[in-house]
Length: 119
Image (cartoon, rainbow, N blue to C red):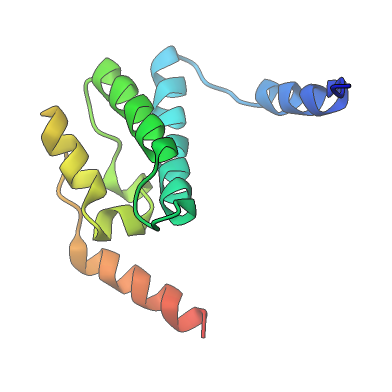
């Protein structure tokens, strides 16, 4: 028998009620930031450690929302792994959506700090 999930659904709805988006564009931009993070997680969880069907599905959703908004998510809001690996840049190049080039020195510094902290 499938669980009702009423409590979990109430919690999710309650959290959504706390969001204060003024426009549909703000909602889409926020969702894009979350999708980029989801893509990073999906790549990490891929059997090959590189790409999976789940990654492809998330990339599709990123492409749809990015094209609908007509602009790129600022690189500062993207997980550094996707910047360092060039996923963010390549995806926008393939879509033909202009974007600000990430500061790769800053990206490298963030990764170095993260690796140092992990030791």
